[in-house]
Image (cartoon, rainbow, N blue to C red; front, top):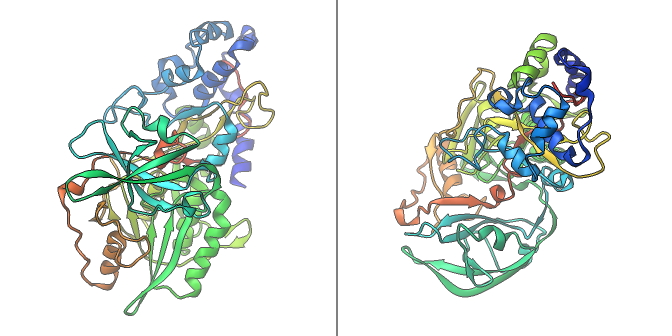
Length: 491
């Protein structure tokens, strides 16, 4: 209902903002500029930092012909897109970049699949780090294997190391080419505490179209008088929300007393799913504000005047009429890593005003901004999309804060208890002795966690992980679709 209402309200935003247009503005973009025209107009309307990019200003171009002249300066749509972003990560180091997460694709079919957990994948979720004493050579370690994948049939598991592909050492300059191939062979390695060396073992892998159920583990661990529910959840994919609700039903039926949510490898996803997940953990806060959206000045001003409620995401008690299986907890334990991002961080931040959130692990990524998919159509939705190409954008369009208006965590959310992962002792996911989970259990039961040796030689400097490698697909917080009704025009 909220999406429908927002769509109807925004139907009139264009007329509200186009009072200064002249007749000559109706000149159509040249046929060879269709993609570039879509990029400029989509970002001009929706981009979160539209006011901070001079070339996106409403009065930057007097008419369509002037805009066409500007657009002809870009033969590659991707270059135009990057130039219209506000200090993008592609051009600025992480400490100086403002926009670290907007991206564009030339095939929206792939984008749509990725945002729902479907990808061309061999099933190995990994992280790449710099080899000790090197600034160019990389080593990969397996974090988990996706069920029903090619890797699930091979001799490879969590904790395994690899340093090369097809006999070539992985480096910062070749890892994308080597690991993005449809099939390849990993050259495995071992770590002796100080050095990483190849061991002669190889694992051949082939990518297939793979649907990843984000619920990797859902179980109950009994420790003394505590029944501890543990869920490893690896992606906020809305098409799995029913399965997520069923998983919570299983935990509730077993009478769990405590809950550990493992988001260490979760790069985010749907805002709607994050709201539902938070509602399943609790259940006693129906209709209270979980999170608030802040769009760019043009869109936000309209919402605030016409329907402020549309900017709020509230706790819910059902999914399309089906009651949520809620745990009604007042404390939750959440496991994080330096790869925990966006919608995962939203759950932590959104719950904080209402329940005690005990965060265990590492600082999170620090992504407090969300996106929408923009298509080349009159409404920027997929309705009557331009058939001449398949470009789509996923620009940042909103900042999100919790009920207390806190949302400033671009440096990441700080853990309550720090416990890093080390390659010599990753442990078995879901096992009570696995270091991060063990820390949570000890905190729950009042016991003493097994201290993992924090040897500097094991603390490899992170380079990138498999989710972030996919061009931003898996490191997202997004609305299910763009608000309908915003017609394209030159302002």
